[in-house]
Length: 142
Image 1 (cartoon, rainbow, N blue to C red):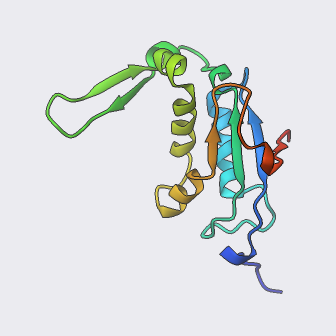
Image 2: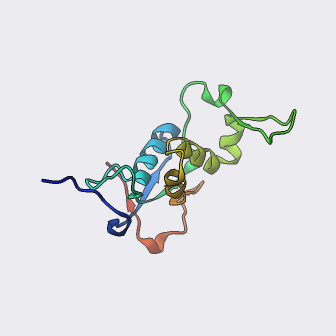
């Protein structure tokens, strides 16, 4: 008996919806990362992009546990001296909750071209409305 290895031609992709309202940001991001990688499929192969499309709605309703809203910061640096910028997560979640969710998912994916390709299949929306009804997404509830 041989081990099954998926290839790019044999992958079939589905669309899933995750509702982040009232759920921790990290747990929702971890579930989205697993779906993007395809780890929920029996045909999962680590070196093949076999994941699905993921739509995260209600990103502004995601919660950060503990004191993360006050103590956690998002840092950016352009490379020039004195250009370090820090944004508190309280402000980031209020103004750009969709970016905070995408950033959390990005940190949980592989740091190579495979992870970059998987991140392109992530769609994050602040509210409950999304523009992908034509793809007939299924709600992920497992």
